[in-house]
Image (cartoon, rainbow, N blue to C red):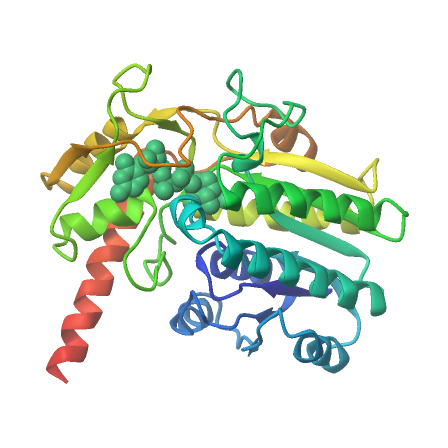
Length: 346
Ligand code: WQD
């Protein structure tokens, strides 16, 4: 079966995608410099799939080291590029590190793909390319506004770079625009392991509930939404992972009609921050310690997807709802705590 190179394979979405690719018969290799992830993810992937995974601990900003991976693995049929910094709030505080990391990594990877004639490329994009959309839900044709954060700007630039590289018809590419990934693998052997303090809502909720964080802030309840808090489209990480397998099959079977195609990966349901908190409390039975704080720079008020294109053209079927996202995220947090307590005793 075809060998697929996954960058960021030890990360949250990358690790879940490696599992899905293996379960669908692909051979895989990973490049992950472990700067924002843990090799512990490899253990989880191997336990779930029973397969050994090779991860090259390489910084994609180092062209020679990245090229060496391609030299060692000739015949790669496709690349899925996850490796990037992805925290909206953090990118507002550290724009240069976001531009340097996310753009230089992509360019090096595309140069290697060109040199080794890798025919198919799947790019991890984001709903942040839409900026603050004039109307919701957004479709793939929704006109971009100015990105609200440097993170979103790197995804807008990344999409443009990939389009231009593949416009020449040398191969084919897909841009997958994720909405808000959440949840963990149902086996609880894999989940979101943000190194250091989490920045995304769901790991902040679960780490607050388990006591790792003393409390949490809801960043604004004065938006013109149904309860004043921001609206997002939370999508289970396993649903996102499977969409990558479907995207690769779409390209390998040459069902694409253009050299680069775009798909929204969201459920189509807009959920407010306070509704997400209430669902977590219902699923976990825990009362969450949160307070209302000021709005966060870089946040958009509301965004959620029209996902019909991915459903119809990729054959994507969403398996998990918000309840399952919160349940699997909480089960994962409990498992991590148990493992940490065992490690402390030994
Ligand atoms: C969600 C909502 C916050 C933390 C994410 C990814 C990004 C991209 C888009 C894939 C916002 C609120 C959060 C907290 C809060 N996805 N919040 N208190 O900013 O939508 O971006 O989805 O590419 O990579 O990061 O996600 O989870 O940070 O915020 O109130 O402690 O939760 O204001 O409304 P965001 P998020």
